[in-house]
Length: 113
Image (cartoon, rainbow, N blue to C red; front, side, top):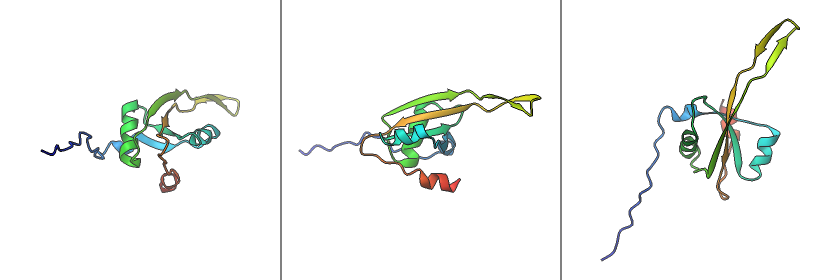
């Protein structure tokens, strides 16, 4: 008898909240250097977890990340015209490592927003 191979991998479905997890790609010198070694950087929602970011990458870009690191950058305190002070917003960033053969085109994403 011929044995059937059973595909145990679940198909990920894009739910409404998936597109709210990845806010925007971060464009900086550090992110450009990471892109040379198959890494991308995204600003993510404040309540996003590593597994949320990995699932969103898989659904939106069709690439399963190998590793996800999350960093919260605290906002700086700024002085306005020497009188009042204010605080910039806190930013949560996700550093996503991709497999060696995977590529993600962020230029289309950046133009649509």
